[in-house]
Length: 340
Ligand code: IMP
Ligand code: MG
Image 1: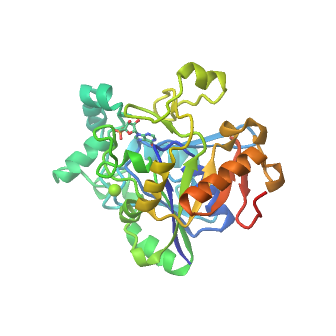
Image 2 (image 1 turned 45 degrees about the vertical axis):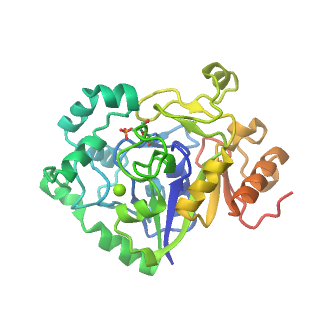
Image 3 (image 1 turned 45 degrees about the horizontal axis):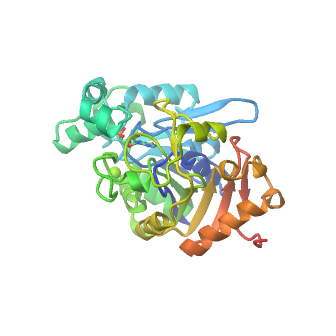
């Protein structure tokens, strides 16, 4: 089988966690591994009974009860956030943290909060992820194996991931987005503290490249950005609210900025960097409210199909999944569906 890496094409907040959870369930993944930076991410899923599942540290692949969830050694772990999520979702028996993960301590959060450059210029989430990475690079941070509360979960996640990928399916759930990459975004310093590409995600979890079977690139139908930095075709906040597509950050509660349309030149560059084998288009209901909550291909509107066809034409990559609404079920598999 091998591993499929789920990556965001622009600035994140595109539903990677939900798509990774849905793929873990559909294809009964053995393992869902969290890649990315740290707790600066926010992943959420609304269930049909009204429950909101929200994580900043754990991958949402736990939505499949048979999937083991792990955090790769490249991801900064906040022991408080980790403990809270493990307890809230009852995951103690199937979660592992790589023993080498750098940890986020209260002082890391405090340092970011007190840093005007990060708060005001960059628009950081102030989760402590970057400061924890700084100390790790200076080789003075603690690792998961040094923290009593993490010890029971500490394991060799690289080994778990590579062994599972040799045998069955592994989903690698990244966080942030390609254009927030530290060394690959044109927007430095308006970026996060590491790269957020498919290769970076594989490295975050210690995955051998020969075991990569595919990359699912998430394209948000109406791209958004939180924090500072350029956003081509940015909509006015009043216009965002008028259209009813206002969203607020899971970690910070900030109103997400929105773009008028997909910047195709940037999307092609994201494809060049990530090498996607398939694309999932998310938030299609923000692009065309008429197709909100569609669950079958015939409920997808012509306007939405036209966007799908444009994305396929511009990138040369097949769109296989469309997300149409907030609930976990509001996803349509269009892999082999003829395009009207
Ligand atoms: P930091 O990584 O929290 O320091 O934030 C740096 C920049 O990346 C800011 O513009 C944040 O808003 C943005 N950012 C970090 N993590 C995420 C994420 O998961 N989704 C969207 N934006 C993020
Ligand atoms: Mg990394």
